[in-house]
Amino acid sequence: MSQETIWLSLLALGLGTFLLRLSFVELAGRFVIPAGLTKALRFLPAAVLSAIILPAILRVEPGALYFGLDNPRLAAGVLAALVAWTTKSVLATLAIGMSTLWLTQALF
Amino acid sequence: MSDIETRRAFSDGIRIMLPLLPGAVPFGMIAGVVASDAGLDALAGIGQSVVIFAGAAQLASTQLIADVASALVVIFTGLIINLRFAMYSAALAPHFAALPRGRRWLAAYLMTDQAYALSAMRYASEPGMTLSSKFAYYMGGASVMWIVWVGATAAGYFLGNRVPPSWSLDFFIPLSFLALVVPNIRDRANASAALTGGTVAVAGWSLPFNMGLFLAALTGIAAGYLVERFTSARERK
Image (tube, rainbow over all chains, first blue to last red; front, side, top):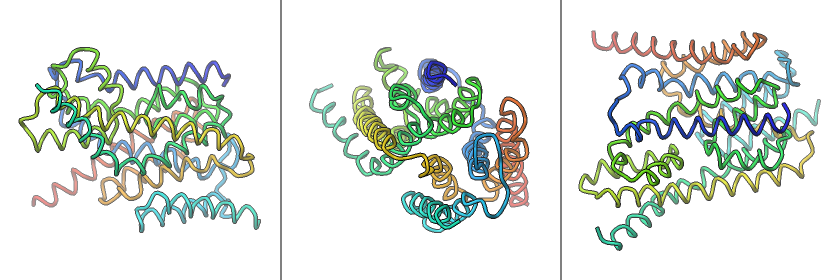
């Protein structure tokens, strides 16, 4: 993507995000979100973010996934997930994940 | 409505937000670091925090730009992640609808998970708050969050520029998302949504136009929804 396309994409995303934030405030609360949709949206973060996490962990270079166990990102990602699960700490997750990746990259 | 009361509400909003600011700093810095790592120039890398001002969407769009996705995919994915703001908007609408347009738009622009959560809690516990006190309370917290977020992104961007690509700083994106998602998986429904979303995204990785990502979002949400319906129906019996 050229820098101009990147600027325009981010601008469009920013404008769309502003409209989402403004939506019901501007409609003066005349409409309510259907309860079913609110329920479905509860699962959106888990679904979408996982859909970004897994390919990013299996991706060794742009455009290719690598499933081998000798993928340093896979080891680092699994360890970071365990740390996130047990400690719930953002900083511990980032620190363990990143240092595991650096260590395995340096060793192999 | 006295000036003193409004000012007190504003500084109250700042005070309540303070403990949440350190949590935003690493994500803001990472948004800047990975943007420079993905080759975004300073205008896009730091400017995204001003125009988008939403961490998860910024990280996702940087990841997709690095994956050479199309512009439409970048925009659409970010908007899906930000759909939750429409829910916050609906929740805050009864409190903000009567504000003048400029203030309404400013409040909308500064909407974050944190500003929404803190304000919604305060409005519920203090039903007698006046319109300008509500606005001032919200603005206090929301504006310090903005300053910290944009500052952290800028710091991260310039830091990232000094680091060679061999450091694999792009890995901070999945790590940040892991730190956000994993601790929140406390029931079967959310676990199913995450597992389905991740698996479908990997299986559909080679589909054109990142259709795999959208399929993953849809099937993941459907899985969470169905599992919840199934488990709550069983509990009722």
